[in-house]
Length: 636
Image 1: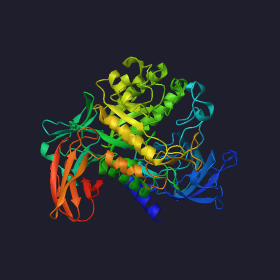
Image 2: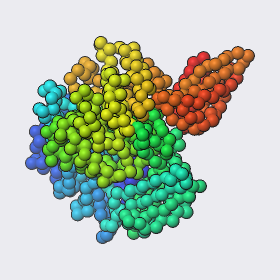
Image 3: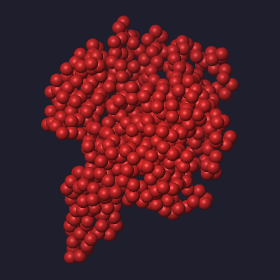
Image 4: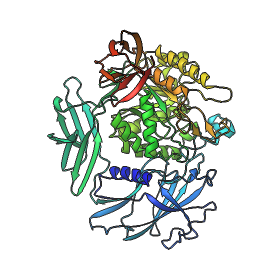
């Protein structure tokens, strides 16, 4: 019941923008269909008897049921619900946050839509078929092949046959995110887009609302702001005076809200004012250089699979934030809206990625694959473009970026994505760019992106230097580094590897971020997975027990160091030194705690040192970042 209430709250918040929304999470009926007989045997009919079927709670993944863990194929979900009569000028939609992977949808026996893509949202117009009493039937298929994203690779991918048939996370099938019936006026607001650009010299900000709305209300900290929006090409624009502007950042995640009214439709969205840019091999946030740690987080938890319930998500993100992993290409696919909402509110920088996990050259040249990728990217971007935490879009991971097909992919998809949203940076994760056979920038597709992302698992110093030699003006972001703990690799081996890698990154002032692979262990059917079914790359276990490497990462990714300079006469002297190498950024609003005393640090630039004196007591010295996240503990 608690889980249902949490998900219901999230769903209502998500749909509060609509004229009327009815959550369809909760109790559904469920059945497997291994012989694919559902349609021909009348499972789509409202009269289909579901009283003897399994009862499940949506969001749901049938893959986490122990009976069905090894099952790949068709499954059906059934839900009966009442609906209010539609007004003549209104339309009805079924909104799905995510269904993995393919689905077909029937309402009252009529096929109303279908979708492919397991991680992005979509809507189906059901205006013509909605009744007072309704039966919803959904066929879901979690199978994959060489035409799906993610999927298997074709033979020219140069991988051995067993590995090329698989991708290394579980195909958790089901209706994995909330569902709702949404009622809107016929002339409703489509894909509200907010562009907030600060003038860092004047302190003002330009707010552009891309809509044809008649009324716009702006809120800051819950209070209405007297902003005058004037019509411009593509929307309405206002300039906020400096006194009304608070810049969003990882340490000051200040959110505004806009309410847009057009006829009978009202849409409300949060946003932040911040500027992200690259310049002279640096990544700048609001004009200030930043270098940060990060992580990759496979959406996998025992008993939940990829569902990401609120309690798991909040626990994970708090652990991630508290260990300095704040700049992350966090997954190989679109992440949940709830994750981005948390990142907006608490301050994290996210690179979101759509599809293309190791697609082969042949696949990247295939018009069908290209169209599927564009569809997933469009659905992701149009959902995520108002999140200040989203700073960049990634075009894929570990594909042949030196081949003509890979270069064309990056060039074309970068252009496509920039046309959707020119306000974010573009990148992709390469495991090719540092290879010996890349002789000049034109040999590899990183020439088309704003910063170079690289998965570097060996020769850290040599390979990052090679990237910089090729692209001296572009920042380098380490999108993956790490080591899997196996029978031959211990936790101490992992710790040494991580420390050595980070030491190499610190010597390269053009490295702006480094994300470990991975935050958590995850289930997999990929070759060389451990006998328990998990790939043990994580600094936390599957059930989130902290390994020793978690604390090492917390220390290595802390933006400052704690030194106990003296402990005598009842006084404890502590030196706080802000890192100047990596991670490195301005510290503002930080505190240091010892015993029952908490002292505020002044603003500290990278390399600054501050000495504090406490009444000596028991317990560690803690460095606390804004939001009360304890990011470092130093024992006496």
